[in-house]
Amino acid sequence: MAAMRCMSATSSTNPGRAAAAVRRRTLAALVAALVAGLALASAPAIAAAGLDKATAVPHLGARGQAGYRDFLAAEPHRAFAIAPGGGWGWSQAAASPDAALEQALAACQQHTRQRCVPYALNADTVFDARAWPRLWRPYATAAEARRASVGTDRGQRFPDLLLTAPDGKPLKLSELRGKVVVLHFWATWCPTCRLELPQFETLRRGFAGRRDIVFLFTQAREPAEVSRKWLKQQGLGLVLHDSGARGSRDERFRLADGQTLADRQVAAVFPATYVLDRHGVVVFGLKGSAEDWGEYVPFLKDLLSHAK
Image (tube, rainbow, N blue to C red):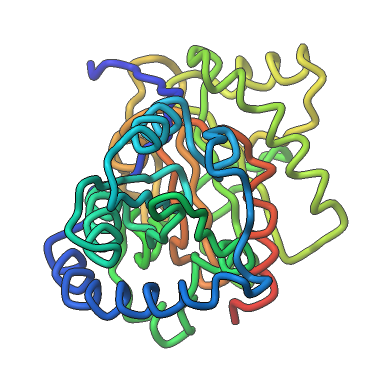
């Protein structure tokens, strides 16, 4: 039996070779545009958060904040880059500001499929707060979604899971096409899962009344009755959709075509969360818990407003 693991730190999947190659080819152009944009640092789009406040950097966990403090003590030219979901990287003692930016972006991009952007350069905060919630873009068109491969990486169509709704009726994930889906995998045996779930209660309430977004919570390696009992004891109104798991040795999720999928192919650690667009394409995935799911509200609103 595979070990049951839960994780508190944010994590992202490493990029595939093809995607990494594309990023390397475009990185120089991106850095050039960013350096040119620094000349407009007085524009209102540039945030003016205190440079010395590691806690002010969006989405960073404890390790990222420690890395940011190391950055603050480093020799110039230095730069710090971040990505949605907690990805980060930094550089020091670079030959020039643009070299520092390029190195920091490359360091950040090694560990995430999300797009990295500069946060700080030498003694300046250069973070574009208005553009930050748009980093899940571009969103797939219907035609692009049909051509997408099936998988859990960004830009892939998520596997068509078969769940059981609270009323006992089967629910295929594909039946939710046309809606944005926040899909969360958790279990009561995972301490970080239990700590994180109240955040989702707050997040869900923030979108109450909207019919174009669905929050799906499903359990791993335990019966649905155990999960629902715990949710009730905690006074959480989150609705559980049964994955079909019946115990700690049940390591596979059901698919709509009758096949099964190893749970570790979906969640290398628990908790794990995916955001799917209206076509079932992954726009964001997080392995482990987030520092604050409230920080993702602007991202979800952008997805709801601009994904077609």
